[in-house]
Amino acid sequence: MPPPARSPGSGPARPPLSAWRFVIWFGIVAMLADVVYEGARSITGPLLAGLGASAFTVGVVTGVGEASALALRLVSGPLADRTGRFWAWALAGYGLTVVSVPLLGLASVVWVAGALVIAERVGKAVRQPAKDTLLSHAAAVTGRGRGFAAHEALDQAGALVGPLAVAAVLAASGGDYGPALLALAVPGALALTVLVWLRVRVPHPARYETGEAAEQPRQRDRATPEAAGRLPGRFWVYATFAGLTMTGFATFGVLSFHLVEADLLPATAVPVLYAAAMVVDAVAAIATGWAYDLYGARVLVVLPIVAATVPALAFAPTVGLAVAGVLVWGAVLGVQESTLKATVADLVGPGRRATAFGVFGAVVGVAAAAGGALTGGLYETSVPLLVAVTGTVQAVALGVLLTVLRRARVRSPGRGGVGGTG
Image 1 (tube, rainbow, N blue to C red):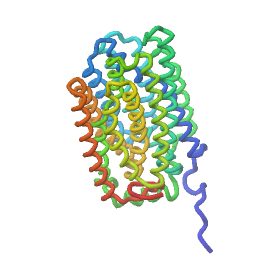
Image 2 (image 1 turned 180 degrees about the horizontal axis):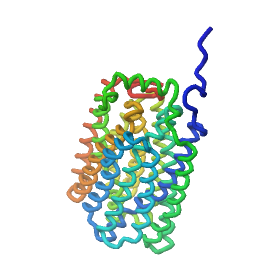
Image 3 (image 1 turned 180 degrees about the vertical axis):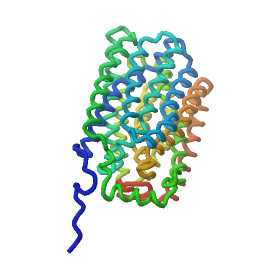
Image 4 (image 1 turned 90 degrees about the vertical axis):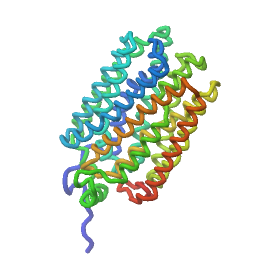
């Protein structure tokens, strides 16, 4: 007689929400929060420029902001793993973000506005490793690529609504940034309310990762470096690849600065274009997430290739090419925000996953700071030089990724995996 099948009742009880419902509700939290901070980010460049900032200053502030959102995860990730209080870290981070954005509407000098832009990004650093870890447990059931992609798609729905709402308030207020940013306090409060409800409803999301999906990572942990407190070598090579792609990738602050200062678009139209880029972001996330679960990390080969075209288009002197560049920028961002994370979850087991997300963010964050300053500085010097330098960086990134794909033939417990097939 064959052994009885593993039942959901064996071991710890499953959460009351299905894995997909958890992913969707967590995505709604991200969607509401994105209305807040993506609405603000859509006007960061023009806002700082209106307060007297140069292109270099915009590049540094937005670059340091992204670095803060990513590099500080080097602290928050290990602390989340050590304390196990993933929900507390998520709540604290979202709280900091939804407070900083409305205050940005009251800023009247560059240094205050810059500090608030960075503070909003610090909130993301506080929450993101814990949030990604919570999501990764449910994504072990739904499929890593699909789970992270669905979350990103909902996330970008908020990124679409936020800039459009800001654009509408800007038009109604005659271009006054204050009322537009203060209005974002409402979706921020809603995001925190839903997050608290979800935490009460599913206090232990790790219970999703049961059966074969969790058993394989645990078995691998016993024989791999992360079991002894280290992250695997293939993770570090992969993080190097991701960092290089960010070094050759411009922030939207610099892109929007070019659009306004070159008189290609009025400031009120920039949030609308940003919203369109977020639609492309969501579509790209879903497409690559589905492909990742089928074909593994090979799908990431398109990332540095497409990213290399962004500066050539986005910094063009004609509105058509510049708009096309921003839309391509959105597609690259969608891959970065979804499939790159899915790969991290497949490379590292649950016990060290928040640490891995934090370290990954730190590596990418240093690159983001360099990329913001690099593109801002080169923009003021020579656009052709900017295109050549960033294209070279992306070519090197592609070479590193190919090295990862050759050396790491690890099948994912979440269907796709690094070098695996679904």
